[in-house]
Image 1 (tube, one colour):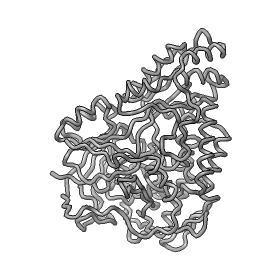
Image 2 (cartoon, one colour; image 1 turned 30 degrees about the vertical axis):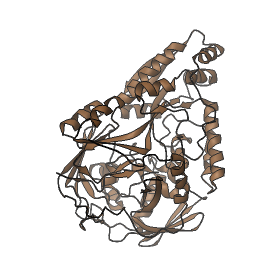
Image 3 (cartoon, one colour; image 1 turned 45 degrees about the vertical axis):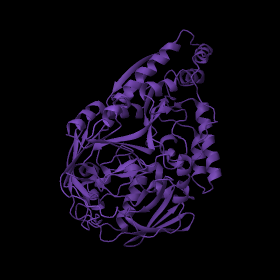
Image 4 (cartoon, one colour; image 1 turned 60 degrees about the vertical axis):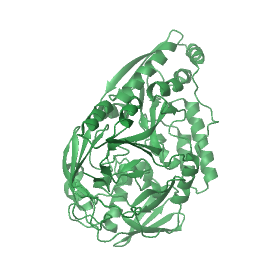
Length: 536
């Protein structure tokens, strides 16, 4: 059995300090990828099989509700990569992908020089007109999940067939990271303009087209995505031939990590993620499996929103405060993360992120105070509330623990379990009292605007505070790290005062894969599958 932890001993505060420097870089030369170790010999062919616990709602990267999706790195390229360049310090840098280089002539302009000779899976050409179309679609489409990341983009201009000029309304330090998988997630993949205009949003779902190393073969909703080799990929592997190394790829939706683990142990799956803490000893004791922890990323579980528009929590600050003081986050971490994770108190902010400050006020576990607040709220005899939970073990288990904590102080809790897409529809319609989900720490604190500003697409509980919106605008308009940090601390203080959002525990991201799986690239938010190959 192999056990890996990329960047072991990493100082996360030091690591994340590099983010702003990378984002603000001046001229970036044309280069890409990490040199392979000398003497490495890859094998081509075969089918790689994955199992993820999230279901794909659409293969359209701009419109999917997934904020990350490793399959998308095979279907689509982004303009910019965000690569680990120093494992010891945890330094990441923005590097070229479809953009060969870029420069900032001033604080509100980025000029991208684009890669030539790139083809989409449908045979159409990648060029500046395509980039303009994509950026404007990400920014303007009513259902775009990347919208909040590109609100500062004022204008996209085609300078020549392979040069694009992006003008922002204000200095935007996070722009480059936002255009990578680390910032924009799968939502900033570049799609074929020709295919989209020919088929429309719905038709594109049946025949998506990107420039990635693999192309679409089949999608069975709530079951699997099947991809096949794209012979016209622009990038070569370390053997001098075009990527990908594999012939086909099957991504299955398996909501229960216990079932996914059984599949990988039986050899029917090659890679999976987020193995339950209780199952880690089983994995590490298996000589055919590799267990890998990504120290740069994880999940903030039980990130929770209380409905501020209707129901018991509306206009009842004391009830909201009581609910948050009644949560024993240390017990959550101990019970659900089994010592691998830790308690988490600051929604969306994690240690090392710009503006994170452990001295800010937080909702510690104080059950007596919770009971007193309930009494002050006129609810001394208790109150009934409903918590809407996604039907997957991490959420349902957390829901049961939460119920026991709230029941104990007089907040009588009913759990409503829904499939993920039904849950999304329900909370987006504000038809809930309490809901919670999993969140990940961002590569740049400005990315949190996609979760916390009014109307943002990934703002699951529809949290709204105009002061928070204004502070995000202020922080995202300067390259001064101290000013940005002050604004982010103010945002966290306002969130504490509102008592509408909270979190439970943090669990580092883990992956388990067969020993024959090679070429996984450690990314900020997980893994990049572009160069995967099978040693068998």
